[in-house]
Amino acid sequence: MQRAQFSTLGKNITAIEVNGTITDCKKMALEAFHDPDLADKMLLTSAKSVNIARLLPQMFYYFWAYAQLAKQGKNPGEMVVAVPCGNLGNLTAGVMAQRMGLPIKRFLIADNKNDIFASYLRTGKFVTREAERSVAIAMDCGNPRNFPRLEQLLGSHANMCKIMEGFSYSDERIISTIANTWHREHYLLNPHSATAYQALIDGLRPGEIGVALGTSHPAKAKLTVDRATGTSVDIPETLMRFFNGFGHITTINSGYTSLKKFLLMQ
Image (tube, rainbow, N blue to C red; front, top):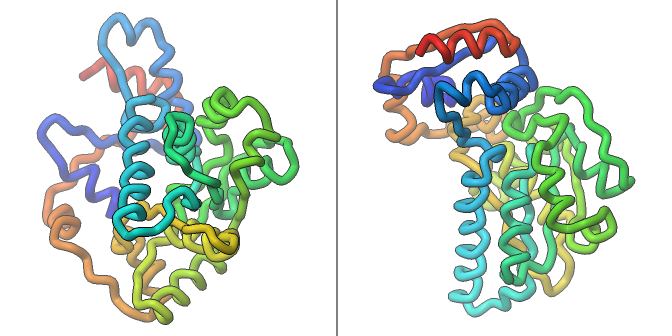
């Protein structure tokens, strides 16, 4: 689904397929941003959270959620937000909103099997590793790039633990959360949102009001959600139209040299 979304846009959009891992892709992008040769010839930016402009609009989610609780007559001062985490961009945006004055009481950190940050909260040791593939693929991160920003905002492990609690979930647990939520509440979760919802179930304390952040339509993880629920997720027309488009993909080798050569040819 996501491949079709990126590759069928056409016009001035070029989709690049790298013969490598997501870690290779991130490294290649970071090298491009720090290459003075490219800086002399083009202006590069990113829609990922390496660009602070990604985090600024993400803060609005938290303010909007607070406003909805207030409209419902609930005490938004007891708001606890469960955040599906990978590269920690969404969490960093939430901490920024809190530092601006939004009264978020706590954050519940939801990791998949790549539990880098949840482990850090438990042990105080930030240990990176190669990411493992999971059913919550957007959370497959072995070296969260926004961790230094969180350190800058909060100062120390002890300060983080005052407002954060970490949870991590296996593929099997994520799938069971999707299944149980569908059968109990007839609500479809995608794998990423399921981690946040499970953290809310496991971590919410009496008197607190929980908000679980959702990430995308469950149809974007159709095979996993279908398998978990025993149903067939309907694909919205807005997503289905990408399958009717013509895909344009340029394949390059992993390694920065290949990316730089491609960019300079544009």
